Length: 294
Image 1 (cartoon, rainbow, N blue to C red):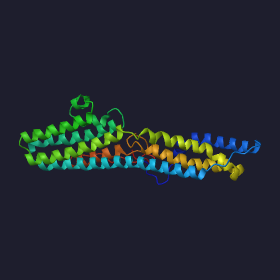
Image 2 (tube, helix red, strand yellow):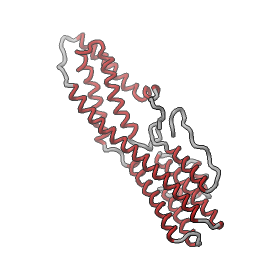
Image 3 (cartoon, rainbow, N blue to C red):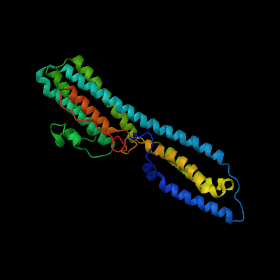
Image 4 (cartoon, rainbow, N blue to C red):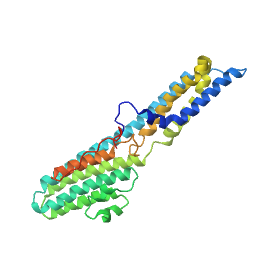
């Protein structure tokens, strides 16, 4: 997630320089042909085209931002539920004999959120997952198709073990189970966002219509702007291409780019809060890297 109030000029140039270069060359060609050819192209209703396209792109960008914001809300729920889980096991399992089981549940939750982060980003599990598991890479949950769900199941089994050992009662188990349900619901929402892209119409038609509009733009402006057409048309095209790119950047909040939800930072927040809740040493929060929070 980019933290700077003003977008980085280099980042913008990296993302749009290719289509802008093609557009500028096309604008120059149209301007030259306008003064060379003996006939004139008919006037184009660019105002109508541009208004319709702006509405279309605005609706698409709003849809993409809603997906991004929903992803952030779901991770906020995950942070709160993780804190609630650590607080519950700390306050309910007060028997000294339950200390190791309590630490295991908290450590497993930290491994769980990091495994979920890797799965959402389509990455291999990293050491932030394995170092909190007693068996490391040999943990049976890692071999499951949905490893984060396996880790959550393991936490539920440990709570059941605490009930059988008499360290918690059925009411306390039910309260902890409600927290685990909240965690599973948040994971399900994240997986829905990852596995359900925008419909193809939302992805293809805005791109197609924007490119068509940029091709027609200098033809409609050259009679008014004359030799300034390449500059005016390219700037106008930049606005439409930028809005199109905003939708592309936000549509997948877990794609591991500079525009996405900062999963690594939120996993570190959970790690710090949970370790401190049970009196364990905690690492420092992650800091932005060149204005980007990962």
